[in-house]
Amino acid sequence: MTYVAADDRYSRIPYRRCGRSGVLLPEISLGLWQNFGDGKPIEDQRAIIRRAFDLGVTHFDLANNYGPPYGSAEINFGRIMREDLRPYRDELIISTKAGYDMWPGPYGEWGSRKYLLASLDQSLRRMGLEYVDIFYSHRFDPDTPLEETMGALESAVRSGKALYAGISSYSAERTMEAVTLLRQMGIRLLIHQPSYSMLNRWIEGGLLEVLGREGVGCIAFSPLAQGVLTGKYLNGVPAGSRASMSGSLSSDQITPATLAHVRALNEIARSRGQTLAQMALSWVLRDPRVTSALIGASSVAQLEENLAAAGHTDFAADELAAIDRDAVEAGINIWAASSAN
Image (cartoon, rainbow, N blue to C red; front, side, top):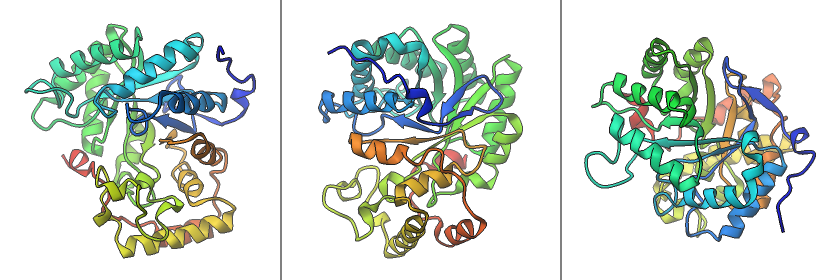
């Protein structure tokens, strides 16, 4: 049957202004990093994306190499876009990125103009779109002049293939340089996408100050620490979990000390009437400089549980103090090398 979006979708979730721009993002956005490649049935993907939009999620975040295999998340999203969401294109914010390994050879990753613009063209073809709303430099390239990388973002915007420019996992210093370079080119840096969670607080060391001062939005990815900040790991590493499969998260990273902190945080969440995942999302959004929290979802039920955190971002001072005692660095920021440059 033809999909018709829920009439009440815009009353289901709060929206926040993205820095000093005209863009509003839902407090929680849906990322397609995991669960939207060829290993997941397309009908399951369709159900998650439809339900997200019905609940007011207007922002869908991708990258060129999301899958597996590389590119498959964009292909699958493009199919769902064509079959279900095409009438709603002007209600959506669709983003993609380039920066990590995508194809063989010296022009298949990092931050060169050749790679970024070729990747954007490929992404548009895979998704069947004329433009994306946000195009990101997915990581800082220490060997390519930042002027070249930012110049590629400028070209993407000037060509109409992207409406806005974004960066991901840049340090505070490099972010300020990017803001300045783009500003000199007559382009605003709309948004930064850093990893941020109760177990990975690096952006509090200066990046948030830069973003707030310069009017750049912030969308936090991995706010659930790749699933560690859910009930899944309270009793150790279960079979079938991401950590058990040694992909982007390994079981070695889930130490007894980390699990003790997670269990303590879970007790605070229970006292708030939230699940641990819901509190983790609420906590990330407690700072008004954070525009949106970017979640993944493997099922409609998981999506609905996480979206229930939206609009519940207030914390009492004693709750924040209690959380601070256990919201400690856990050594799970696998993207730290990019933001260290």
